Length: 112
Ligand SMILES: [Zn+2]
Ligand SMILES: [Zn+2]
Image 1: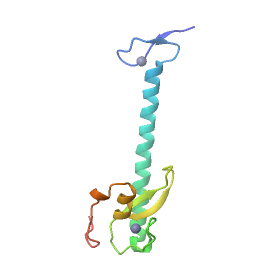
Image 2: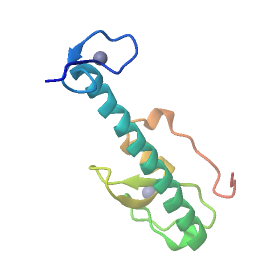
Image 3: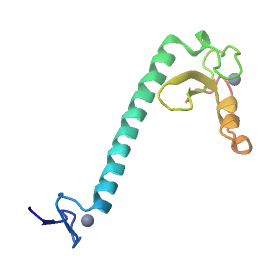
Image 4: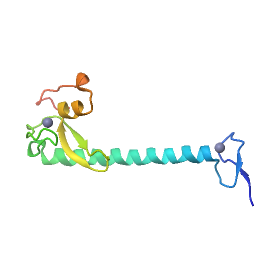
C-alpha cells in the first residue's frame, strides 16, 4: 500500500490518492470553473450568431415582442443553464434576475 503526501504544496496530509480529500474537492471545483468558461465562450458565439441574423428577426424569449433593428439584447438561458431560451430585452432579462432597480436602459439606436 502506497501512502503519499498530498501533492498540494504545503499540505501535510497523507493518503493513498495523489491529493487529500480537501484538495481533491477544490480540484473538482476548479474543473467546474473551466466548464463555466466554456459556457461563456459558447454564449458569446450564440450572441454573435443572433447579431448576424439581425436581432429584428427575433422575438424576446420573455415578453414575446419583436426586437427593433439594432436593439441591445441579452441572451437568456433555461433554468438548468444547459440551453439558451433566446434573446431577451435587457429590461426583461434584468427584471427576471430580480435586479430591476439596477436595470440599464439603452437607446435602441445606440449600438455598442
Ligand atoms: Zn491536501
Ligand atoms: Zn422582452
